[in-house]
Image (cartoon, rainbow over all chains, first blue to last red; front, side, top):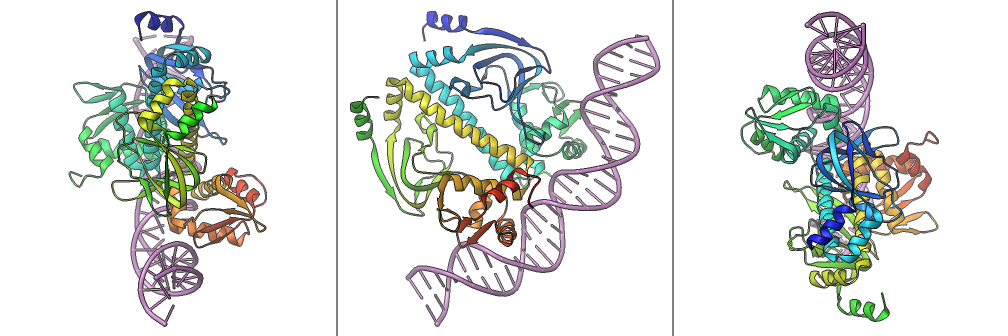
Length: 217
Length: 217
DNA sequence: CGGCCAGTTGACGTCTTTCAACTTTGGTGG
DNA sequence: CCACCAAAGTTGAAAGACGTCAACTGGCCG
């Protein structure tokens, strides 16, 4: 895409800032905007009829979501909550569909993004179907370290406020089980966890749990 | 799209027939073809490292899959097995990308298909995270009846060879639990099950289980 | 008619959830 | 700056859902 066009695209965007704990949109709202996260982090969640929450995805800077909002007549399938103060750009649906109509390359890019999501969902579906809780938690942590991990002298800090409850909602378990698992891992020196904060001390050890390697435990 | 163009698209397709139990492609193969199922039914499965199988999706006539094969350099994330004799059309990747490049409308259609998949996966993820086995099996059966159900004088026949094992791989449980659940439901007159065959006698009763309605049980 | 594959069922174990009581942490306002 | 409060986290005990294993049954196809 030429610079002039790109410029137009950027001009068509609206800037949005939201603070921690605020919602960008709610599950069930008409899906009329696509967003690009510039800075911060968001959590996409679904609520079941009986009130249980499920975390579908964490969004990191650079990600575009939710792609399905380019389609007419759909509603957001999840709510989007800022877990840290965030800056975003937003395009409305018409702008996006026009863009796709004029630039077939964009369509393929969008498809690429969506395909990656499908792949992630399939992975998680397989995990939930076949794996024990401990291993699912290990995988979730590893995913978070690669997405939002920040290296510190002590280990890899997951750079988000992350409660036991959050982890539980990501892995299909309860905050109690996450707490117990963390306790065990701390005793083994794999992680250091405190209030809404997790530092991974031994990523390899977590991988061993996630993959059930024959070693070291 | 004009008839002449449509004709061209159809001509570009290859016809494929495969018999029950045969595989159209395997997990890990380079993903270079997109298919449209004309007749029959397919099962998309993933195998975990330790050999457990997970059913990702059943394909019914009219469905296009797997859409991600329009992207370059990817592999099929699942294997595709014919559960009944099937007829298909197949396009190779280049043909599809050319099509998308010339007809932006197609891109949106494709996106629509993928979005529906994402929605389904999210639903299943939520179910696996929050619901008990019995309810998941009920939901899976209901999905199958609406997809491949055939009305008979007795009830709604799921028009596929469907073993307890298949259901277990769809719902993240074991064939034993499915067998026990079926036994209970048969005693309640909700279904009639025999070897690889299921007839739903009382869909409403299954919905009551799936949604946990306060009534009737 | 024999073997094979799908299905059934009981016994048992264990992973997880649930509930309740309690402790810790961090932010806020006096 | 400190005390207090709400939210987050911990932990024990008990129950329950489900998986695992093994033995057995029954229908079908060759």
